[in-house]
Image 1 (cartoon, rainbow, N blue to C red):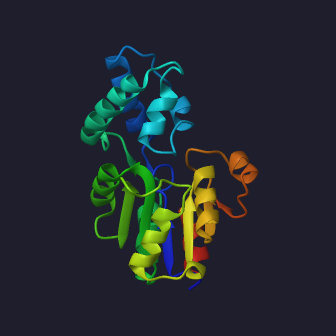
Image 2: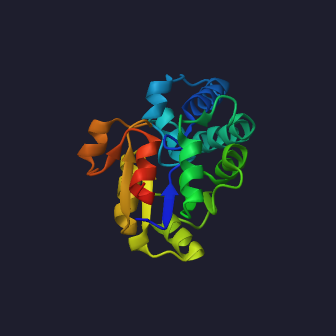
Length: 217
């Protein structure tokens, strides 16, 4: 086995959450009288946490108090609608089960709000992950390595035996900052060209490739 621990990003890596993110965002934008965005545009806004998503979606001159109001309303709405259309990418569940059977420890570190990360992982991957962490107060968001470091300490795995799997430039930088290997996936929110431009050396196009790399199968 090449790695003892596989840490996954959530949005765009194991779950296709784009439609629910876009729908929830557009709901609160309309609620506050702001222009809405296409799902493809929202795709490029996500990755740095919900507050940054809201900030990017609003006009540049929007006052801070209004940003915070939209942010609060988004969280309230998204908490109820985070799984309306969300689903695992094809082959993800089988891949995770194969890794678990092989003895690999599994974790999630995401910039999505922790409440949503916990809810979605329980709904779609109950009993699979050894540790799950989303954005929470007191822990710096990716690409800071803090979330990954906490998982490494919690699960007692050395950096050299760990790998981070994600779909974005943020994930690549997170792995670099945490000093662990990285596998980039090309089915998520960022295209392969952008991944390569941001230093991706290993890019996979199917979940089964991840099993081969991690478990040497």
